[in-house]
Image: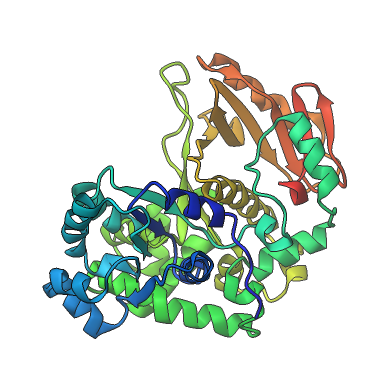
Length: 409
């Protein structure tokens, strides 16, 4: 197995020069601990590693946090810190007394639960970062450049990155982006995802909710996967899993907390009043989607009924990962109104709204961008739009609407 360098590495080291604590959140097996342990060797400060997955260690951290910090002195890397939020107050005391940058590196895989404890105890003292599974740019060794519709940047990137065809894109979609699979550590993809769900996801769901029927939860997450890149429909999910709506909403929240899924919210303002209010649901890892929905090969996934949804999920998640890896907040939305006008993604920044359409075609028709005009009604300016598609090279309909190959994002 070879270690795949992460785009976040330099940012972690830079933040460690100014912040006493860094908290890295993200789903299990996404590479948080592997990266931080590699960086620990690089910085060569004798940083100790301690995991709260170990029950004896966790018990000490929860019941005697002062003793825990006496035994595990900074600089220290504390893994799965969400299991002992009692530590945060004592970490705060240590930081306020010593002010040593980089003393505490922490990871956590239950995002929202962690945020509550951090906001209460470590506000202003901790740098917060989110790590997703591998981005395609990390896998191919390209620079960390969050997606933009800046023509010069895109043209430059298209020159640096080797083009790939549609079957290769779907091979990447089907394989997924979990480091254990991509690096070759686990050769049996189906066994990996089966174990991942039973060992980590189901266990964490029970840990957060107190109880969860494994069979019903498996039906539920499969139903969510079957509806990826669609509007979130709690009623349909509850029916499929044979659970009530309250449980369906709770389980969606938990999957979001665990960093398995994310929600894209509709763009709306006081002028665009006819927009719908329901978010769309996506997975961070398309390999998990393909496993859950039983696509047996990249070829079958490419030709199957979900190919458009899989491609959209892949593209949106890649855009999101790029911003997370750069330590930037992604302001991403979608647009859909009651008149059935729709825009797959809207990027907000610098007072502009940049509309994006995602299509499984190499030769997009200009009619695709007709809905971009609905943004003219918004108080914000309409920025450069783009169709992200299977084109072999960068192109444009005109100065304001680009054609961008998905392999270049």
